[in-house]
Image 1: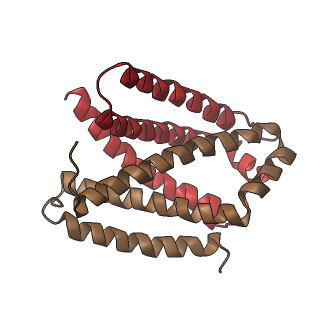
Image 2 (image 1 turned 120 degrees about the horizontal axis):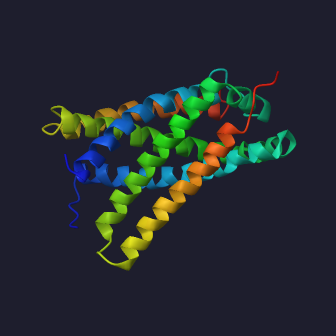
Image 3 (image 1 turned 135 degrees about the vertical axis):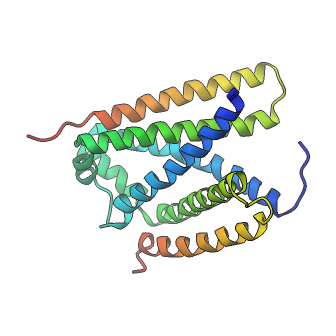
Amino acid sequence: MNAGSLRWLLQRISGVVLIILLLGHFGITHYFPGGEVTYEKVVLRLSQPFWKFLNLTFLVLCLYHGLNGSWSVLEDYLEKGWLRITLFGVLVIGGLALLSLGALTILAFQPKV
Amino acid sequence: MRYRWQLGFWAFLLMRISGVALIFYLILHIYVLHHLLDGPAAFNELMKTVQSPLFKLFEVALLGAVLYHALNGVRVLVIDFGSGAKNHQPWFWAMVSIGVVFLILGALPILKIF
């Protein structure tokens, strides 16, 4: 399998997993039980290892799927050259920055004893 | 790239547009949530702003983009791995119908209609 087919396949696999995670995420954050999002509710979840793990998985898959998709779009419009290389760099660095910021938030909270 | 203005192309174009919109939302989402690190008072103040009526409308638009992207994604899977290539057009309308139903059901609690 070449790199292109692997990207194509991973985009589909991550997409399917994201649908499942997103259903849970939307449901728990907005519908069951619903109500306003507050610091207390979010931190209560984020301080538990299960939610940390789930949210980190979610973060990594979202960023992979989004950046891989963005590159597929950009690739179609960019000729080979410096702009293409620059924008690829922007996606990679931007992705790493968002991953760090997201992971920092997810891992910051410890359970209250 | 040559564009051919038919249904399959519209499905593809909307997939790209909703995808680009969602990546911008993802950036915003990660940025907004990192304000959790500023503590309860600052975060809850920020939540008041992003849960004001104007933002509720954005949230419904977001739900629409997510639903289209996810359901058309399922259609893409059916085309790529199943027998969807022959009848990709009925699949498009089926997914749009399911999407509209979910959009209405999802929008009601967001807009506090029930």
